[in-house]
Figure 1 (cartoon, helix red, strand yellow):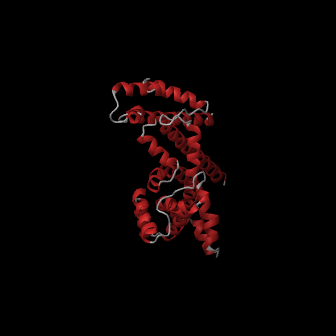
Figure 2 (cartoon, rainbow, N blue to C red):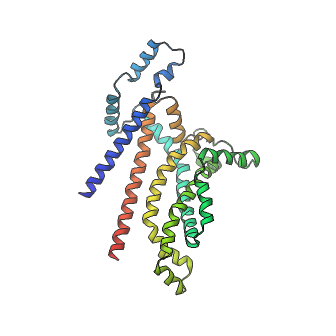
Figure 3 (cartoon, rainbow, N blue to C red):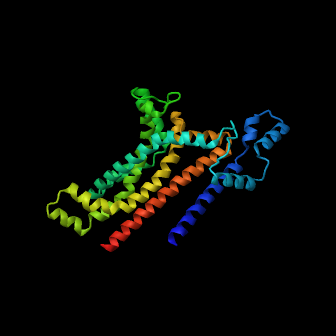
Length: 308
C-alpha cells in the first residue's frame, strides 16, 4: 500500500513538473513559428507556420497529446528542424554524462571527506570558505577558470569542442574546465551540508570510547562515523544529481560543449517546445528516481538502527 501511494505521488509530481514547464514555455513571448518566420514575416506567413507546426491548437490539447505520445515513448518532433526529439535527447544526455558523472562522484567523495575533517575539528573558518565557494555562480567560476587556465597559462582549451562524429572520450582534456566549474561549488555544498551531521556523530560516546581504546582515527571514521552519514549522504546525493544536470546548462553554454544544457538553452531561444519539454521531463525523472533511492536508503538505515 505504501509503495503504491509513493508511486502515485511520484507520478503526480512528474506530471505536474511537465505541466508547469509546458505552461512556462507557452507564456514566453513568441513561439517557434515567429522565430522561424523572422522579424519581417507577414501575419499570414506566421499563421501558416503555426498551423503547420500544430501551434494553433489550444495549449491543453497540445499538452495532452504530448503526454499521451510520451507514454508510448514518442517525444515528438523538433519544431525547428523536424527531427525526432528522442534520439536527439539521448545523444545530448550521454554527452552531458561525461561531465555530470565525474562531477557527482568527485563532489560526493571529496565533499564527504571535507565534511569529516571540518566536523571532526569543528573548523568554522573552513566552513566560511566553503560557504563562499558554494555561493559562486557557475558562470563566474567558469569565466574565471577560462581566464586563468586557458588565457593566462594556456594549459587547457577555452572551448570544449568535441571531434566531429566522436565523443568527449576522444579528447578528455575538453572536460577539465567544465568539470572544475561544477565540481568546486558542488563539493563545497556537500561538505557544508554534512558538516553538522559529522559533528553530531563525532560527539557521541561510542566515538570517544573507540578513540580511548586506541582505535586509529581512520578506522573510527570508517566504522563509526560514515555509516551514520548514509541517510543524509543519500539525500544530498539525490539533490545533487538534479543540481548537476541543471548546472550543465550554464557551463555548457560558456564552453560551447554539445550537451543537454546547450540543447536546452538553444531550445528555449528558438521556442522549440517539444525539446524543452523533453529535457525537463528527463531531468525531473532523474531527480525523482534519485529521491526515491535516497528515501529507500534512509528507510533501511532507520530500520537497522531500530533493530540494533
